[in-house]
Length: 171
Image (cartoon, rainbow, N blue to C red):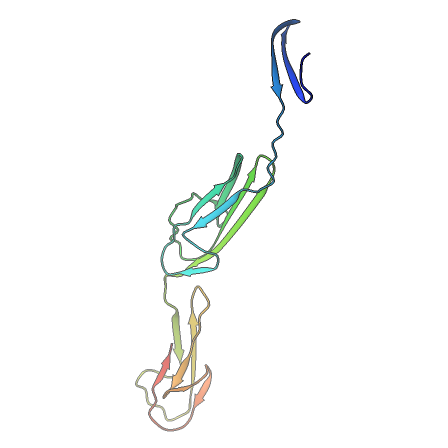
């Protein structure tokens, strides 16, 4: 046949009639690298007071498919995220050789200030009996609360029983 070792011959026949003969070289293509996933515009565990615009780029040497979701729903790269909440952005990609990549970015949009609740005494009030001062902070994300009475730290639930004038500051 005149073919070198490893070469192939492709013969096309139609009802027994040879239409053409072509030498075909077999090339083995392998790809062991997974697709590369890049996310910009937001980072994992970010807490932001501002809206974010995640952009997703997937690259690979071969053809691939990619899926992007935000909070379990399909998401388009470059879409503005405005909802005040904790979010999970998931990106998965698989190339034609079965190599897989996965990227998760968790972030929170928290545009509202914490709500402080103070109880035990009203601003400007006078009391003849001891008062118990309580305070809480409510927010979409973790908060740190501190409170002072005349510049000295106090805890929620502390009781004030000494006569005097007081300035209570809670942040």
